[in-house]
Amino acid sequence: MHMLEKTRYDIEEQSPGILLSHAEMKQALELLVQRLEAIHASCTNSFPLYSPGIADQWMLSPGGSWIGGYWGACWWLRSRITGALADRRNAVDICQRLSPKITTGSINRNPIFWYGAALGDLWFGDVKARSLASASISAIAASCDPKMHCVPLGREMGGGKDGNQLISVDSLAPLVQLLSRSEDSAHHQIARTHASTVSAACGTGNGAFHPGARFADGRFQPVEQAGEWSRGQAWAMLGLSRAAALWGEPYLTCTVRACEYWKRSRPAPLPLNRLDDPSGPADPSSSIIASLAMLALAELLADGTDGTQWHAFAQQEIAAIVRSDYFTGHETGSRAKSGDPPSGIFWGCCYKTSDNKEEMVESAWGSFFLMAALCVLLDMLKPDGF
Image (cartoon, rainbow, N blue to C red; front, side, top):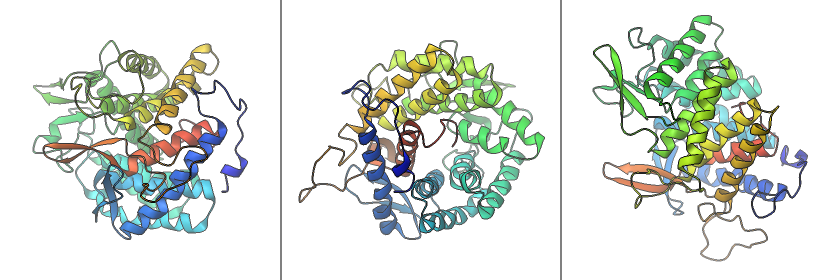
């Protein structure tokens, strides 16, 4: 494999049994990269939404919902790793199939077009990806509400009738990054204003974040208990780390507090989906997103011991996931047996598959973030480079 053949690791066997060795990281990344071929073969011109457990039976969507951009991101990243022109062509094709989402009234256009289009411009200078990302920036900026000082959740993609009065943490990271790549300084200001509003409306003094807030009577009221939903907390951490990389304070301090809250409230890896539901499912994908925020924080604090500590904690989180039953085929030296699931399935994503049912699934966002985290640990990507 192209980039994997060039990877190096300065501390080859640091803390064996806790952190991943270079060989383990490389093997896990190879399995994830290879897994994309089988998923692609099963979905052709549709977008893969999720596959329950290790079933390898995909629920497909013609439009991709909010997950479509992550499917494109998987192929942009695979192309970056392998250097294969066929992989890049596939990424470009997926990117172009996302274009109908530009007019969708939802803040979730941000992950669709940051991960599905802007990465193609950022990593490859792809003209088609740049054009689509630019068009999405204009559309997203136009949806900014000057009274609320933010881009609201919107009524589509599940936002509901009150969506234009809601704000959420989910899309903070891609919104900040997408709008900040614009050549228009007004778009940069929208990004910064939105980040400030989300931080004030959803944040707490102890680092816990509410997943969203509702605007009424001229001010925001947070919804749900702060810090209970693991992926919501992780989304907030990732967004804050991206804002800190761009603008420094107060986002750097907010990132530190949010990461400290995560470590304090979830000291063990493979966290619950919701802390207030101890009998409910886990959500290891949230730990990957949180770890990416910690790796970005470590980069920002690189001159001190705090940076080293955050990097080590993130490595431990990722190691636990790669070695867990939520990732198939990772056992060193193991050989597939008849009846074994395909290798490279990361099924640690908690997903609402129906109105009253949450399941552990394989999904593009989980695969992309795990691939990206391994690339960061292998020094193939910068922590804030995607």
